[in-house]
Amino acid sequence: MSAGAPDSDSRLFPARPFVGASIAVIRGDRVLLAARANEPMRGVWTLPGGLVEAGESLAEAALRELSEEVGLPAEVVGVLAPTEIILRDEAGRARHHYVVHPHAALWRGGEPVAGPEALGTRWATLAEVATLPTTPGLVDTLREAFARVDAHVDAQPARTGGGEATA
Image 1 (cartoon, helix red, strand yellow):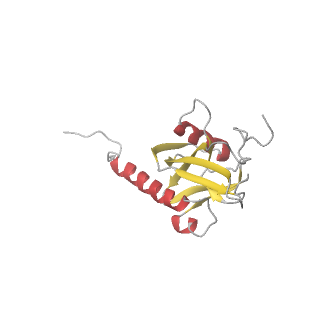
Image 2: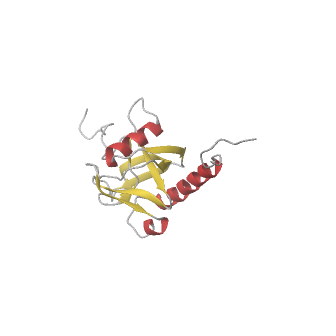
Image 3: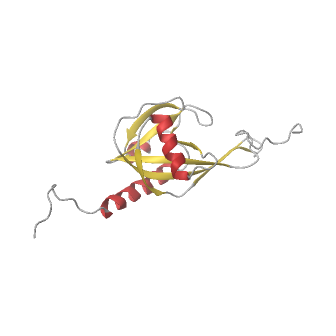
């Protein structure tokens, strides 16, 4: 590669956008957040997520990243509107460029434990999220995630108390 030519695999001043997947795990009126351990935006609260690997679906990537970052299982209930994150340098060049495909999911048990890619984790309400330093567009993504989870839960058949119906 010639000097000054962009490295197509470099995350700094990339030659192309990187595709990522994230996951909004909903537990009642709270969502799981992770504080980023890596740049860009180290220490900022966001959804667990990361880059999609070749041959991996977006949902598979989101669930893998959830497991790697915080060690939790979840049930994906829908894909949300993508978020484009472009961070520019003082000259206007794209320093970082990611297209992240978030997913809405239901919590399926356990407590999060921050892995090497997360400085910490927390369960937060939308009101609490609005007071935190977050990645761009997170509050709008979370509104969509809560609506998707609510619609999924409302669409589930009502469960009776364990016995079979009698005629």
